[in-house]
Image (cartoon, rainbow, N blue to C red; front, side):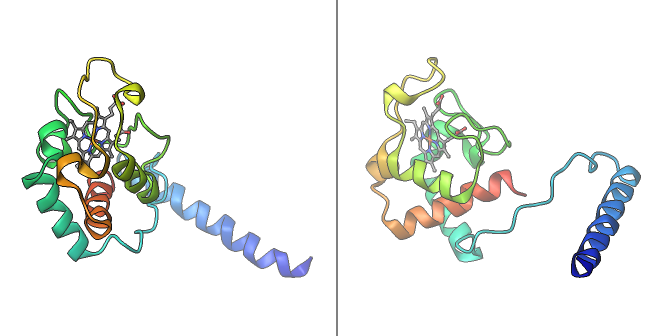
Length: 140
Ligand code: HEC
């Protein structure tokens, strides 16, 4: 029992600090703690993913830097239509599978997203990189 007291006290102190910090700087109060950076989100992967995304096929539908386009949703916000949370794993799995017509949630988007970037036919390492880049768009 006595062993539990110290961590509990630390937790209370930490919570107190967080709420104090939030009230002093505008807009930060509601922000959840930043998730840890996934292991594959390396500088090299983000750079490679950037060039694949913005010179390759992804920006055709999702817009340059993933701001969104007529055929693909924005990837730089924290809102997701294909999964609840934009974790690295969810993003990576979706790039592997693509989005077949039947799974498109917004019927105004007519063009399915090809598996592995469709014609880009991304390798596993390239998918690691594109997923790393896409993850950074919503985790600045
Ligand atoms: C032909 C158009 C097209 C291309 C090219 C394309 N996508 Fe998509 N993407 C879509 C559509 C359509 C959806 C699903 C939108 C919906 O459900 O309304 C989607 C969904 C996504 C999502 C999930 C977004 C969310 O809000 O849940 C991610 C992540 C994504 N695409 C990444 C990529 C990446 C990375 C590439 C390049 C390898 C790519 N897409 C290429 C059309 C495209």
